[in-house]
Length: 223
Image (cartoon, rainbow, N blue to C red; front, top):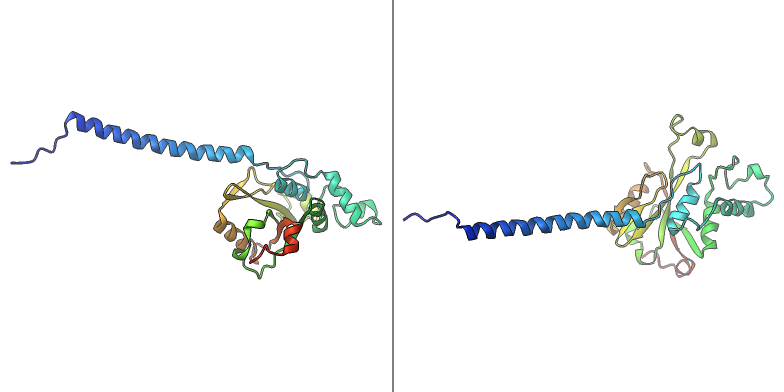
């Protein structure tokens, strides 16, 4: 006798119920991912590029505070670093007043907040960084000096660009002020890859580890 493979009404309903549950779970997961993405967008402060104020934007993005520093703050630091210089020719900022602050201004700004920026030797392994004590990262990367795309950069000789990287929850984000929105880097392994890539000769980035002064004194940011 041949087995009857036909499903009765109860079996069909049970199968449909299972499919509905699976679809509900799938939709819930999709919605959760959307909510997480929306949460990140709404809660990450991201200052956009203006003139040559990338150092200012990087600092404010790092501290997640639009009032962490102002242009006047950084101008004042530049003048403190070179008090005898003629205003238009201060070596620590743009002679046109557009920004373009050098590393000395950035270092002093961080010190004013009781933080230190430690230059990361490209010969070291990023995977040995003690991420538990690191507040964030600031990178100095080559700028786009294409004449037609960035005439201001071309004329004012700004060849480098400052960006910040911070951790939110379990993920790291690139807070580059030239981006439309923060870009997800990922978790620790993704961060290590990101840093290692930027340390290559092709990328030619300089990486600064941002830690509190106490951590800098303890020197335990690298294993």
